[in-house]
Length: 157
Image 1 (cartoon, rainbow, N blue to C red):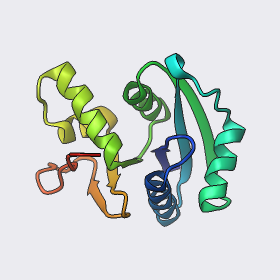
Image 2: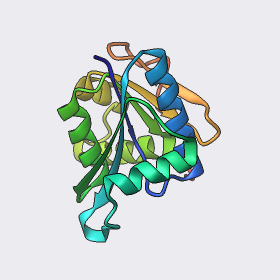
Image 3: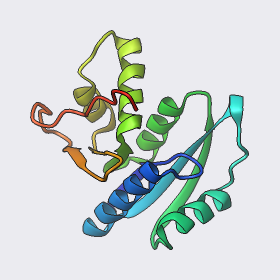
Image 4: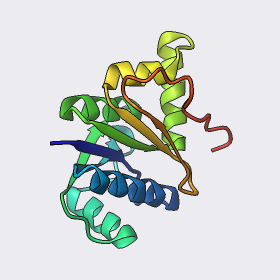
């Protein structure tokens, strides 16, 4: 079974809603299950429950079939997201452009200016779809060279 994972903030922002809509579209197109993931930071926990996440997402974009709501606690959002994606063996990850920029900065600090696209594909072995606030998408298919579709820089986000 194909799995699409989409990390979102809580409560979902308008950018999160655009990312969620794209994840739902991809899941429907691929007949996939959908995992909606929120990372609740230990150091500033909002005490978000799965029920809270589900209600907030459904209020923003409507009821979803075949969706699983997951709240993970962690110290670093990006690391916790990567751990979940790897543990669930996701086939597709749909992230907002702000999250892509945060991943880029985290990995650059760890590995001294790596090729983030290749890193994500090799570490995740899945397709990464980046969604801008306006719904515009960039796709990096697992196994492609990435030269034609780099993750966008988050600039002033």
